Image 1 (spheres, one colour):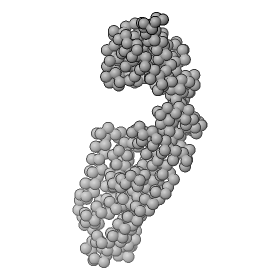
Image 2 (cartoon, one colour):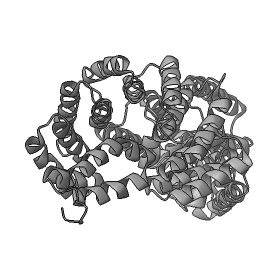
Image 3 (cartoon, one colour):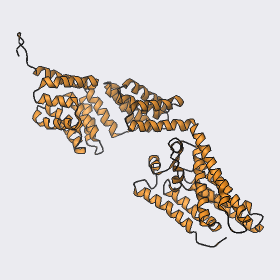
Image 4 (spheres, one colour):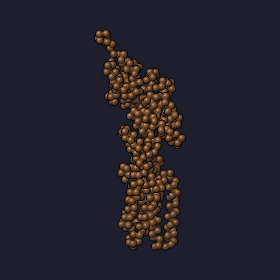
Length: 496
């Protein structure tokens, strides 16, 4: 065995550390990166690898680590075993063995859990241990008994230490370890046999053909199993549904979530389908799906998701003008997981129910919360407007909304309507004109005409807007009455 510095191992350690530092610099947590972040930078996931043909993930994930502890454990192990194996092999062969073990671990991970997310150099590193084991088996007859005994003692002690360290990390991927180990043992066995046959010239690349074939076979097996695995199929359908929702392709969302629900009752699928149904106006369907999710989640340890399910059902009830049910649901959500956003939604329901005191109390809490979104504040301002009471506070709410998002056409529209309700149409007109220029909504176009004393133009615009939404129809009813009262009265001869 040559005595030289383990330059390749140093480079591999440096690459892993550099990738980790780049992750942290890009904003990924150094201690607890989330799944979406890991997937975005190249972590392994069977459904993406197989269904979306992202096979490169089986390679890139070998250099990605799930937090600084994961990195430290793996780099400690790599430095120890990697330096030892590198002295046994020439650099190109060492790199080949390392990558084959890493790929074997990646494919084994996909085979075992196609829907899971994994990352790390563990498969490749354990594979290097496997290479040493394969060498010890194949070369045992050529080494002195004391040397064999010492080698096995070192292997077992180091392997035991690294297993202990690995189990101290919560995201241990046993499948990747086992896959890398098997590939490493095979590589060490055939490589050592080749080296013996070549009388000290080292292992030949040809000896690794069988290892390459084994890794490819493992990849094919992982692909076939993933393509026929119910959990993988449902996970892929959920990914397609989420992507479709981002594109606002609501029919595709319903199609893919229905595929999931035909196979298993998954609360997330019900909630996503509920969102899609609410968005396309099927409010009863949205309520039914949210209710199904609530039934599945009640009594589970997923309390955060249960709160979101109640909040989603509350939103559907609000759109359907069932404000009592909406208030009850959002109150349950806030009881399960207190959240300022839920307080704001409760305030909106209370205002729509005519509970002005309760609604304004919730609105006061919301306006004092620096994290409250512009949209939430605007909704509360509109809720205060439709009560016809405390328009000064309604104006304060919408001003706060515009302070947080000065480009919001919705907030400019609300401020315009509040100004008109306060008998300040000349102050409201610029906001409505700006809202029309930005969003061109029927209601705002009607208000511009109304302010400019053209009720004959405002009325048909508002009537058309009322057809599109029952809630808008309710809100527009008093304004339509005012506009109609402005129309000229014809005398008996039909002359205005």
